[in-house]
Amino acid sequence: MEVIAVKELSKLYSSRHGSVHALQEISFKVSEGEFIAVVGPSGCGKSTLLKILAGILPPSNGEVRLRGTPITGPRRDIGVVFQSPVLFPWRSVLDNVLLPVDVQRLGRDGHLKVAMDLLNLVGLDGFERRYPWELSGGMQQRVAITRALIHDPAMLLMDEPFGALDAMTREQMNLELQRIWLERRKTVIFITHSIPEAVFLADRVLVMTPRPGCIMDDVQVKIPRPRALEAMNFPEFAPYVHSIRGRFNAKGMIDA
Amino acid sequence: MKRFWNVALTILLFCSSILAWELIVRAFEIPTFIFPAPSKVAMALWRGFASGLYQKHLYYTLLETVLGFLLGSALGFFLGTAVALNRYVEYFFYPYIVMFQSLPKVALAPLIVVWFGLGLKSQVINTALVAFFPLLVNTMVGLKSADEDRMNLMRSLAASENQIFWMLRLPNALPFVMAGLDVAMIFALIGAIVAEFVGARAGLGMLIQSMNFNMDVSGQFSVLLILSIVGLLLNRCILLIRRRVLFWDPSEKERLERERIAL
Image 1: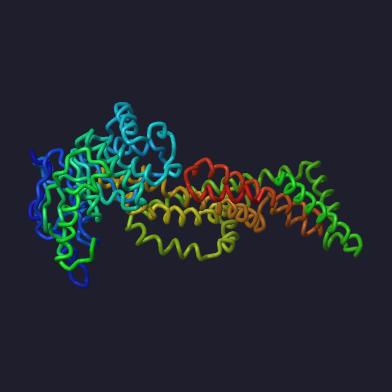
Image 2: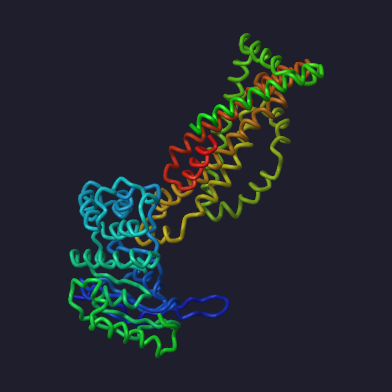
């Protein structure tokens, strides 16, 4: 069963200097429990796509259906992880995780155990009383992931969540995310500009081109899971990266 | 050990400058009504407190300052919130507020005495007028400064405007509000003293003026000393509240760090 159906989605930004086609007639479907990576260079409309999926930006044309109902505004069954952790410094780790529960009035009592289990899952047990400034960048992003999962959303949207982390932490977080995903099997749409990261994490990679943003390729990644970091050195890994990179080069774009 | 030396040095510096002051005044035989020696100031201070005169006026000035501060900052906070949240309020009222602010409030003090008399009410109103603006501006800026990513997060959770205000904008504005309170407290003391200069039945400002008429310069010095200590203590009170409220603010931690070095 498909969770997401995107149909002929377009987004036009108008300004005094003319209009920019951020997205043009994008269509794709995502099945339940699938891990989708969207890869493309800066300015290809990836973040616009994510904002539309999250319901915080209206599309110009076309529609997105989540489990059959169109997304017309913010929804309670979507979890979003942004590029920066976006934690509230006046809330402790646990209170940050419970933010969606507070906003949606789901009842703290019922979710306390869920929060502790999730913190355990991301390796932050014992940190629930700490405050964001006491945590490293990677730990803060784990809190953000936990927060996105707390209300058991139908879909997890991730907008370059590890883009601000150093290379070592980033690889570690990729492994962690795979582990969490294997355990929870949430539907994930993961936006990135790193091709190896996309291939390593995803079941399917959507390749986007800029201006107008459209989907150029839809690549199935058939590498068995769980994938270890060494998988990046396996012979079956390189062709995926190579072919996706090839698509960008053929378009005359900067090597992404 | 280092801390001990710092404290010892501070005390030494203080004592030696008092001593130098005393010696210079005596050596050059400067008359007391021009510039009193510290011993004379200390005596005036002792006399004032022993007779109960200073306590009475100190209480009155403190009362004005605190009441005016509370009234002015509450008004400033609520009006600032209204301006920040409502475009129409901003459009129609903000120009007048700015005009009002560019007016020296001290110049209003005589009018306020005409309208409200020489009693406590008049001084509290004057103090509130002076303390009002720092809160207004800081609340406004603070409420408008919520980070775009955080706003997007709240929107993606389908938060209502009400929830965005209580869970994001207000806590986010607190560092600004506390900075406003810091300024407003000092302004309030100034406002109270000015109001007493213009016309009051009691208070340290009124006391300074009557001492001036009597050429009691040692007395004036002693009251000035009390005023500066009161100002310092009021500032400390705000600082304590600030530390409590803003325990999470990184700039607050930098401040603590700096103060620890200063001590």
